[in-house]
Length: 477
Image (cartoon, rainbow, N blue to C red):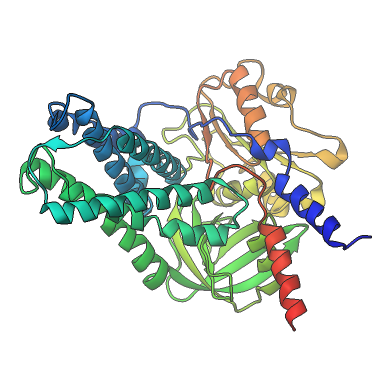
């Protein structure tokens, strides 16, 4: 019978198993092509700050035997610095964003530094040995710190497993993610009190201490100051519109409007029960407008609940703006191609409304949707097309029109994208297919803002968990 425990159990197992694609690890890639620029300064500084430690640890000696003590100490320091840099990147400071090439790349490096820190810590635990050197603290204190670090290592492994497994809803994952400061502090305390080739009050001691304290300060800034105290600029919901599965919100500021440029995004924090966790969305309005417009697609438990509870007048905190998506070439010249799918259209709407027709090349916008009815912002884009601000190419799959390489070649010609400025935003499948298509037509560099706060394996059970919690609450009434 439907509803029997055995049937319910099978449904739960089937949902948790997901599809084979849910368990496939995506090949890591950078959002933009690796051209030389300011965005490499941050990664180079971070890596250099870790590698320089080899100079002090390479000649370290063991008390009992020749072994890998130098490597063990070095890889332990690398683990500490990787965690420190991961915390620093989480601050979303503008200077960090510039040095790493945008917030999308900041989060990419943040995740990789965190993952590599776990690997480095494991290597340290497998190779550590008694060290000849200068004690960082009394033997009893150092021993207690070492035991705490051992416990923290297991705690770190558990938290990382939670981060990698998408079974855990994002709102719970964010809470566990903040707990990563605990193993970090314990690891720093162990590193500081342990016997090393240098004294803590030496130049090397101050070098590592500065990074350890910077990592703690970064966590306090992000979690305490920005998430709890200074949560962003106050706005209110002034208008609500629903376009198929997309919620369009206009937000009016309390006081001076937020200053931004077309293509940037912001984090929204709604003053509603269970909705205060920050979520990033691209600003779809023109920078000259007083209000902010956001197009939010129903993709998970949070966005689904938002459509049910948000009302005109709801208070919203807006943190930002962030992002540096170059929608037009900074120095002019060459063709301009924009490709968007679904709510990936949002960065292009503000640009289309803002730019004026002049002697510069007019961008060609290829907009991919299911149907015209499901196309957010289509009316604004059509008006921009009529005014000569953009050239709009609409491809609605329901009408049998899907974007292909031939469509782009028909506009620009074979090899016509050499020296072109290409920007894409939309579903991963669309970006992956069109990235190769435009390169075949001569494009050398493709701008893609691949923003993703959380990545991992397994099916996303956020909706299912939210539904079960609702049913449970109803049963208790």
